[in-house]
Length: 433
Image 1 (spheres, helix red, strand yellow):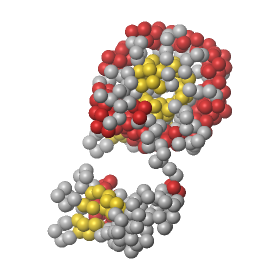
Image 2 (cartoon, helix red, strand yellow):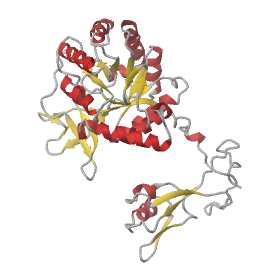
Image 3 (spheres, rainbow, N blue to C red):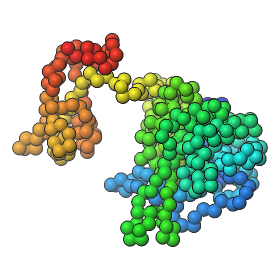
Image 4 (cartoon, rainbow, N blue to C red):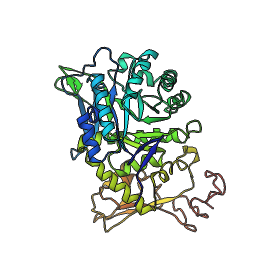
């Protein structure tokens, strides 16, 4: 059986699935239920200072994007950090950690960008027995307007400064949560490293407006006729999150920086993909808000079965496996040749592939009078659009040409195995005659 136990920057948990800082981790009741369901760790919903109380809206806090089957694809929230008293949160964290010593408990923190504010809260958090802290430099709404959250995360100098304060005033490991609302995610990651961060977590939510009420002329969710931008999360943000995780993992400056992956993790496969691109563990939020805490059992079972099928004994063998194969466009093999192939036994003759290719691509699919669809190899550039629009999984595939075969589109013969890059991969002499 695969070993799913995790040791992330010295923080141990029975599996790599943590709950992200969000409504599901806002109170002791929730966290206890999460641990009973099998979650390996939680990041407690972001704590603020003991100053003026945080006041959330008493109206809709979420907007959504759905698929055609009403499946939730993206969630936009305008909720702020915890509005519960700091003292109560700290008491509950201490109680939970006492009863679940084998689970990871991380305190997310956001206070004003002032040294004294951080120096004051860190000992209080440390007394709870928390395993680490996560600096929330990502919230794009509400708190950013007060000079916190993304307002700090968008300025590398601030990230480095606050991280240094935290490393100075606490013994706990420091995780810096990064905002995706920035041009180059490597810059804040490098700043966190300079400040002494033990790890980074990403991505936080993406600045967004998901919809507009065309009767009331206001963004949704709307509060008394007005709407505000919020933070976007869920399956829809996963591609953005994967890319940003990979950018940090494959950068020479940050290659050794541990990463906690966040952004649209809904099942075991999502988690495996994040880890393959460099994440040491993953954090989950929207999937739990959609399906409940017990979804973790599907994640645990799925990841374990997949690892067993691959002969992988520990998650450490997964972390970073895809990083070396993630390259810049200029390093792709331009001589790799594949052609689309349609499985006639699976084809339902819907014609989507034909319409997409004929109208928007390379006119590489032919349609007979009796609606049989075939690929014209002499026109196919293997763009993969037909595969993506086909409603039948596995019906259309991309098949590489073998040595000795001729590309009917270019008239050139394949003379080397794909992947046999005896010269630079873009060298025309590498694969083709």
